[in-house]
Amino acid sequence: SQKNYSKPAGGGGGSIPKHMMNAARQYNSQLTKCNSVSELLSSFMEQTSTSTTSTTAGDNTSSATHLAGANKLNSVNFSTCLHRLARFAAKGSYSSTPSTSNMNQNDARKQVLSDPRFALLVCSMAEMASGVDASISVKMGNEMVLQQWRVKCGNDGGDEK
Image (cartoon, rainbow, N blue to C red):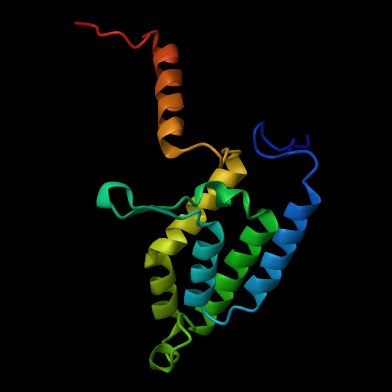
């Protein structure tokens, strides 16, 4: 029997706006021009960041989301990222600086796997694949999960004391 590989609800199925397709195409071209793991991961972070800095009451805080690729990456972009990372790691080119250009494959792989940006890339890819809505804030998402858990457990949120 054949498996049904339809897109999950809320995962952005259906027609994709032309401007988003063009942006994804342009980003894919940018990815193929990266010359090292570090450069590629920095590009991913830059592309998926929606950083805002708040200076209210002297509080300099920064927030960024890479949730599901921030609705800026598609499956081809994620595939290109992974393919390029594997290629760079196999060649031992983690960074474009001369001091690390002679590292062996195992060292490059270890650096890729231990890089927090790689973890964000993998998480973003999994979120996109599972249909996570990137427009939802983490706080709102946590509240939705908590509410669903309460309904499933038969608890309406009131205290049980």
